[in-house]
Structure formats: C-alpha cells, structure tokens
Length: 384
Ligand SMILES: Cc1ncc(COP(=O)(O)O)c(C=O)c1O
View 1 (cartoon, rainbow, N blue to C red):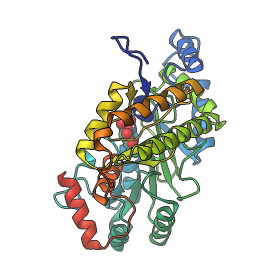
View 2: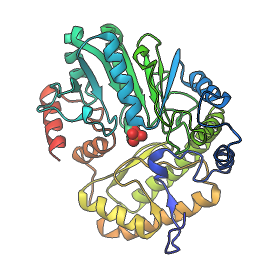
View 3: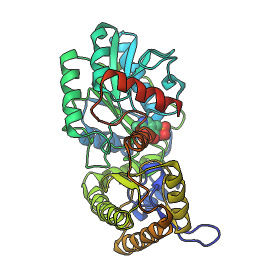
View 4: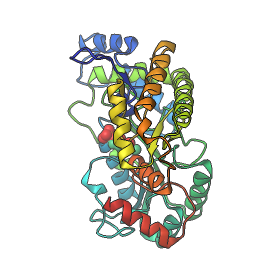
C-alpha cells in the first residue's frame, strides 16, 4: 500500500484480519462492480446470488439453517439471544471477544453474571467446570476460538466438559472461521451447535453469518434489515467463498506467513531481542518483554513501513507474493537493527505472555495455575 505522502507499506493488519485475498482483489472487485451496476439483480428480494451464498456457507461450515448479518457483533448477539430464548435459561457462559455490544460489558466482579446474564470464564476451564455445576441456569456457552494461545489439549478438555454438561455451544469464529482452512477452524476440535463466521466470508466487505441448529436458531426466522439483499456485499461474499472453498488462499497465507514468522523469530533471536512470536503463519502475534520494548517495536516497524495491527494478531494476505515476502523480511531485519538498545534485555516473562494473550483474546492463555492464581491474573489484567 502507498500512503498519501508516497510512503510504501506492507500490510499485516489487512483490515483487522478480514482481507484474506488481498486489498482490491481483482476477482472480487470485478464481481462487486457488476453487482453495483445492477447486472446481478436489485436489492429488493431473493436472488440466485443470495441462494448461492447461503448454500456455500452451509456446505463449508455445516448446520441446518443460516442467517446473514452485517457485522460480527450483530451476528454473535443474534445467535446468543436466539439460543437463550429457545433454551429458556438465564445465563450465558462466555470466553473471548464477541464485539462492541454492551451485553459483553464486564461484571461487577469476575466470574459473576453481568447485567445481561453473561458470565465470563476467561478461557479458564476449571472456572468453566465450576460454572457448569449450575447447569440448569445455563442457556449456552459461547467461545471465540484462538489458535495462538490455546492448544488442541485445551479444546479436548473443553469438548469433554461441554459434552458432560450437555449445554449448547456457540462458536464465535468471526475472526478465525475459514481462515485456517475451508471451514470452521474448530470443526475437528469442538462440537458446535451454532457457529458464527464473518472475517473469512467476504474479503473485508460487511458480511457475517450465523448457522447451525434449526431448533436453537428458530427465533431468527423473521430477522431482516434494510440492506439484507444488497447485491455488492453478496457478490463479494460469493467470490470470496468460492475461493476459500478451495483452501488455496489459506494455504498460501499459511506458507507465506510461516516463512515470515520463521524469519522474524530468527532475526529477533540473532539480535538477542526480548520479543517472542506466538502463533503461526495464519495468525501471529508479537510478545514483547516490556511496554518499552513494545513501544519501540511498533515505532521501528512504522519507520520501516511494516503496518502491524498494534498489540493484536498479524495476518498476511494471499496477495503476498515472493517479492513482498522478501521485502517484508528485509524490513523486519532493519526493525531488529533499530531495536539494538534492547539487546539482551530479556527474557520474556509470564507477565508479558499473559498480557499479550489478554490483548488478543480478552482472556487467559492456557497455562498451569490454581484457582487463586487464576483470580489474581484476571484481576490484574482487568485492571491493566
Ligand atoms: C471473535 C470475534 N467476535 C466478534 C467480533 C466482532 O466483529 P465486528 O467487529 O465485525 O463487529 C470480532 C471482531 O474482531 C471478533 O474477533
């Protein structure tokens, strides 16, 4: 990307991880242009385009029914409220970020329900097990999966707990869905009754989807809104879903990202810098040892024209060809040169790892700890 001053940037933010194919992807742009001039139908009713998008979503993510929304926030909210209405119990147990809606506001005290009956268990499975003792009052569990700070073991245990409690599970795959492969990233890890996907659907265009059990999602039957049939969004979704269904863009992203991550880890290590890299080529995150290192890292990156999503997950797009990768690697080596004053200032400690995970997943990383330590970490990180 080139900014107004003519400076050239390499983008690892990619519209908060929603641009998978690359900015201005030619195939998407062409389909959107045709839709904008009316050749794919008007925005007044059902169309073959809408049917195609809906069928593709069901094919890729599973389920009996699917509903379309504009943002991840509205889709997750709709899914959770629908399931709660169907089940008829007051509480929702939650882990992770689900959007800006006030229904996700923190409670007065950790592990207590907030005003909307949402109890955050911050990804701590002992806390989840504890909360599930009150099973009769729980309508659903909603989890935003993360693959940087949670391992398959975490999912295995979560799956067992949920199966034993027989509580409906909503997976909020707004961020990760369709990015790790042509389907839900937790298809093999969890048994979701309802799923939500968004960032992987339309290459940055405003589309989100809820799918799953017809019974649980029944309250959404009549939901509609002004721009429901808007054809440019559907065109972007149709093109993007056709591409992600092949798994090819995700493979390119993973391989290119892996090569960048490998280079970044080696460069940081070679310069003895106190920064770890969590995750893999699909999504990765810098874990700086201190606030000073963090500030210096993002400043140096800015100077070198590497556009990172500050403190959050970094994501390459499928448009990163070999030249862009090589350029990004060279720039990152120069970032490490600029950080020379921090050489040997390590190591990266538990505090830094917990803080990084909290910044990206609004919860606790997977680690050994007892109930007292869990509470201490949550209180510290909420305060931060
Ligand atoms: C897991 C998750 N859920 C929900 C949302 C909210 O989506 P949106 O910003 O599209 O409203 C996000 C946004 O980053 C997200 O990462």
